[in-house]
Length: 469
Image 1 (cartoon, rainbow, N blue to C red):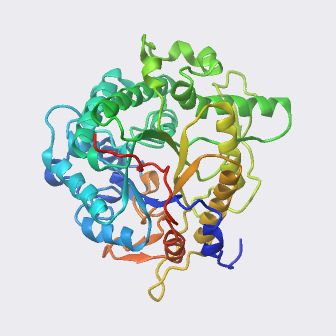
Image 2 (image 1 turned 45 degrees about the vertical axis):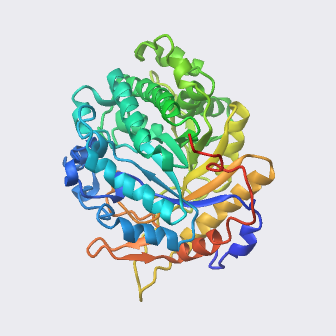
Image 3 (image 1 turned 135 degrees about the vertical axis):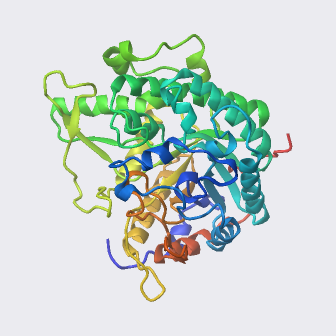
C-alpha cells in the first residue's frame, strides 16, 4: 500500500456502465431513537446493557441519531453520487413484541426513508434482518425456536406489503453466520450463547425463516428481486499437509456449507450431518424445499480470509480446527488481515461449488480510526483497501462472474457491535458528541468513482424490471 491515490477514472473504465455503486448501513448501528415512536428493545439493547458484553457498555440508544437526522443523511448519501443505498429495517419498530400488533409509526419511518431515496433517484436495497431480534421473542427461545421463523415470515409479509412497491431489491438476512455461530456458539454477539445445540437449532430456524420469508415476499411482490446476504469465509489451509487440507474442507462445510447447501442445493453438508446431525432440530417435510427456492441475487460481505489448521486434540468438536497464522502481517485497526485476493478466490470457489445467481458485494470496507484534523480525515489506508478490492472485483467481471454492484461498508462510523463506538468503518466520520458528519478522504475518492456511473443506457441490473405489479 502506498500514498499514491488510485485514479478513479482508470478504475471506473474497468467496470460495465450499469455497475451499481452504493453505500450500506444497518438499523441498530445508526438509528438510535431506541425508545421512540413505539419501538421496544431488541436482543442487542439487552446485550449492550449487560456488563462485559460490549466495549465500554456502549449501546444503540443514540448511535448516529439517524432516526432524527434522516433527511440530512439522505442528502449526504445523494452528495456521494452513489446510485444505491443498502439499509436494514428494524423488526422491533414494525412489531415491537416480535408478534402482536403492528406499530404504524415504525413503518412510517421507513416510508419516509424509501420515499426520500426515490425522490433523490437512489435505489433502495432493504435487508429485513440485521441482528435486532425483538427481545420479547427471546422469551420463546429466540432463533433456537421454530416459532420465530413464522414470526419472521409475518414481519416480512407486513413490511413488503407496505414498502415493496418502492424497493429495488430485498434481502431476507444479513450474515446468518454471525447471528448463528457468533451469537449462539462463540458468545460474542447477542444473545451471547456458547452452546452447539442452541447454535444448530438457530441455524435451521434461520434457514427456514429465510425460505418462509422468500415465499411471503414473492406472494406480495412477485417482481421484487429477493436474495440473501452471506459473509462466506474464504478458508485457506495453514499448510499443505493432508491434516490441514482436510481441516479446511471441514471449515468450509461448517462456516459456509450450512448456509449455501440448504439455500442453493436443498441439503445440509454430509460432513456436518454425520458429525452434528443428532443435535440438530427435526428437519420437517418441506423445510428444505422452502429454504432452497431460487433467488434473484445474493450478496457477499467480505473483509478478511479465514486461515485454519487441524486441531488434533482428542474429542475436539467439529470442525476441529484452530486458527493458522496470517500470510500478510498488515492488518486494519480491528486486527483483520488485509488480503484482497481472497475475495476473488472466494467468489471463484462458491461459484464452482454451487449454482449461484447475480452477485452484489453488499459490504466491503476497513476499520481505521483516524480522526478529524483541520476539517478533514486522511484515511489513505481505507481508500487503498477499497480500491484494491474493487480491482479484484473488476478482474472477476472480466472472468465472466456476474458481479453487479458494490456497497462500501459503511456510509458512516457507527455502533460496531461488541466493539462499541471505538472501531470506525465509515467513509464519513461521525463526531458522536455533536453528530457532525465529515466526509473522509476515502469518501471523496469513492464519490468521484461513483459519479462516473451509470454510463450510457444499460439494462440488466436489479431494479430494471417493470415493478408495477
